[in-house]
Image (cartoon, rainbow, N blue to C red):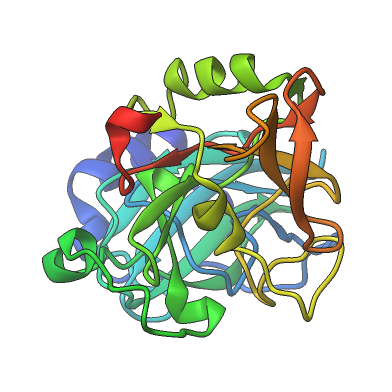
Length: 272
């Protein structure tokens, strides 16, 4: 199919896209792949940046999102020109399958590539607010739930909310506590340095580098020491930390420079 005249395209956007259009089919010179999110992945929010590989031979893109292959009942971007990304808001948040069709104009034809995703599922109110008794043992895919647009992770075994990506700078113990108190993640404050038992609850001794449960959703967890807020009971110049390389929990001198992983919720907050 030859390229649509721009003046006709403008009319189509306002009127005729309720009709079924037959677009050209052919072979793209270069395969188009999804950069973000990865094809067949699960989205982390109701708002999502879609980006893809491009080519100098491609002059225009058009994005459909629907509940069936090729559908546009959720989103029709209209012409994106040569841009290789667009942000789509108000996507479903029920764990359903999302079908994305990316049209592109190349070599005088409209060609398309299909992608499939699973939408972000908002946990039920009871799952979000109930305080677990630390008695259940869940696999990582059920235990960890991305929240705050993917910037944090809810641990359903403990009810704690962790930074999805801990900070990659080190601090001595006093500054570590202040660092978490001042922390803002996804526009939310209320963070603190975790108690040693909370930090240790993330450790899986069957894994190393990092010593976290298989399938965990965290990133930038280094095989090193991370501070807890817990001071040694008999030597107050020491505080407990956890090593996420080998899973060891031990004491360290408070002036030592150690990594920080902030947490939100739970605990006796006045103690932190």
